Length: 371
Image (cartoon, rainbow, N blue to C red; front, side, top):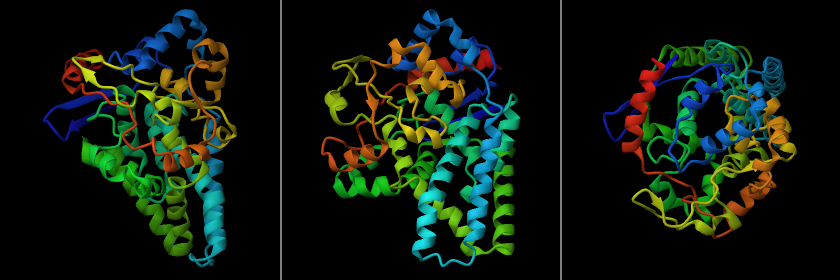
C-alpha cells in the first residue's frame, strides 16, 4: 500500500511502499534508505556479510496478536471496573498509572510492531488489526503513526522528515530545568502534535477507518459503560507518555545523554563532520522489555526493522561483536531523571542531518524501483 508525505517547507511529495515483513532482504534494505552518516544500513550490511543466517530471523510473529488481544481485554476490564470510581480519587489514579499506563505503552508499541507488518503476513491485515489495537488509547492514532514512523527509519535525523526530532523552538524554549520537566511530563502531546507542524501525510481510507472505528467504540463505551470509565483510557494514554518508567524509552532511544554527549557541538561542513558524531541510537536490555515488546533492543531494531520482537535477542546473540561494544542505557527510570536534572542533557542533544536536497533524487529513484 502506498503512502505519501509532503513537506511543510516545499512542494515536494515523497511516496513509498511498505513491504511485508517476509519480503526478501534486498527489498527490505532498499526500503530503509538513509544517507552515509547514519550507522544502521552500514552495520546491517556488515552483519549480513558475516552472519548471513540472520536473514532467517526476518518475518512476522503470529503469536503476538494473541498477546495484544489480552492487553486490550485487560484495559477494557479495568475500565469497566472503574466505571463507578470518581476520576479524582487515588484508586482511579493508581490503577491508571500502574496498570493503565503500562498496558497502553504496550498498546503503543504493539502498533509500532504492526507498522512494520510484524503481526500478519499481509500489510493490510496489520493495518486493520492496528485499528482494533488502538481501542484503549481513546483517540485515533494507528493510521497516522505508520507513515511518520517509516520516515523516522528511512530518514533518521533528517530535520524535515524525521518527526521524532525536537524542533528548533522546542529546543530553545524547553532546554532548562522547568522546560525539561514539562517536556518529560507531556511527551505524549509532543509526539502527537509535532509531526503535523513538520510534514503533511496524505489522508487515506485507512485514516478514515481508524477515525470511524475509534469514534464508534468511544461513543458506545460512554453510552453503555460511562464517561468515568472512558476517562481511564485517556488518562492511561497520557500517563504512558509521561513520568512513567516505560516512557523512558522515548528519550533513551536516540537522545545523546551524559558521557555520550562529548561531541555535542559537532558541526557539518560541506558534508563532513568536523567532530565525529556520537552514537545516536541506544539499546536497553533490562526487565521492562518484558512489557514493551523488546523495544529496548533499539540498535538491533533499527539495523533490522523487519525482525519481530521475539527474535531481537537472538540477533544480538548471533552478532555480539557488533552490539556489545555499543553504549547502552541501563535504566529507563534513570534516563528520565538524568535528562531532567543533568545540565548537559538538553532537547537539542540529537543527531540531525541537513539533507533534503540529497534525499530528493534518491527518493525519486526509490519510487521508480518500487512502483
